[in-house]
Image (cartoon, rainbow, N blue to C red; front, side, top):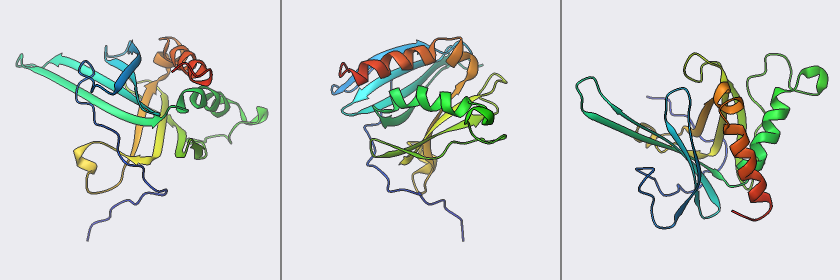
Length: 183
């Protein structure tokens, strides 16, 4: 008998799986893209109706010279854009200023446009750096390894990418556009 994790909340229907960040389906619109300074991956923000897919695309040559391409996808409601920067600021507050208790690694789950999201601390977000995870407990991971069980969708960002590499500024800009109805 094997143990299979169960979803804590009702799962949303999956969004269209995007195989390549340069070959978007007709109904999908790219909002912005940025390069991760740690590994050179492209991070693209694309709109699928009332939802946001964040794509991480990596294109490299393997040791034998053959090409390698990967495009991972994490899906959220568009409301994740303004929610993230506000929630990240709250998450980072010290306990003395009303933040989480010392040693907290995850925020409470929050309902963002009908999907349950949280922020988690990542002790290794790649490149031996700490960072943050945006987790969507309302959507199952697209990866084939989770097709028969549940694993929430998540995306991990290193601190230097968020705070020095322009990612948080980009998310805040998109969040403000969303709030103004410009997306």
